[in-house]
Image 1 (cartoon, protein in one colour):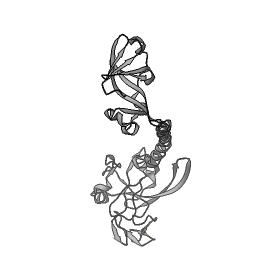
Image 2: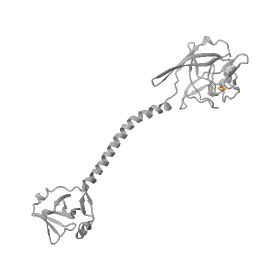
Image 3: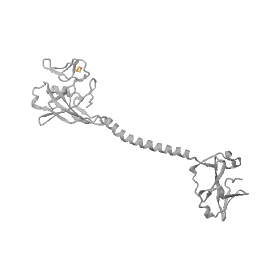
Image 4: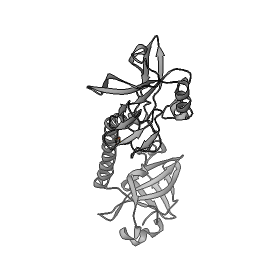
Length: 302
Ligand code: FES
C-alpha cells in the first residue's frame, strides 16, 4: 500500500500536514521517504516511521513536536522519476516521485562551476594583461600631434627677400625607451607681401589643425617668414633651391616647384608643405609637422 498525493498525516496528538511527494530508491525500487508539508515547510520522513492506514491516512507514532524535528526537504537535491519504473501502484504519484541526484551528477555540476570560475579568473587575468597592451598599441591613434614649438634659427640668418635659405636642426625622437636623433631641413623664405598673398590665399597654408579638426595655430599673413617642409610631397626626398631659374627642384623624380610652392612639373601631386611658424624674440620657431607623401590632399601625420 502506498500513500496518495495530499494524504493526511497524523501524529499522536493530531494532524500535522499532508503528503506532497514520495522519495524512492531508484536502484532498489523502493519507496524510502515521504515529503510532508507542515506549516509552509517540507519535512523528510523515513518510511520506517510511517504506518499507512485505510482511508489514505498516514500515521506517525510520534508527537507533533517530535515530527517537527525531521530534517527539512531540499528539493534541489532530487529529481523526478517515472513512478511506473518503481512500482505500477505508484502511478498516482506521477510527477511527485523523486529520487536523489547521484553524487557523480553533482560532481559534474560542481566541476562545471569550477570550470566557469577558473575560466572567469583566467579571463580576468588575461584582460588585466591584454587591456594595457592594447591600450599601449592603440594609444598613439588617439594621441594628439606633438605641437611643441622648436627653434630652428635666428631672424638675422634670413636677409634676402624672396630668396629661400636652408635651415637644419637636430630633432630628438623618443619612442618608449628608444631615443634617436635625426637631422631635419626646412626652407625658410623672407617673403615679400606679394609672395605672402599668393601663399596665404590657400587656407591650408595658414590654418593648422589637430587630428580632431580643432585649430592648433594660424600663421599670421603679415609676418614676413614662410617655412616649407624640407620633404618633397611626392615621396619625401630632400629638394633644393636653384637660384638661376629661381625654382625648387627635387632630384629624385624631377619635380619642380615655384617660389610660392606650386608644382611646375614632375610627379609631385601637390604644392610644397607650408609649416606653422612664429618669431619669438628673434628666434624662428616652427611646429615640426610631417605630411603624408604622394597624396593630392595635404594630410598631417605627425
Ligand atoms: S620625391 Fe621628389 S619628385 Fe619624387
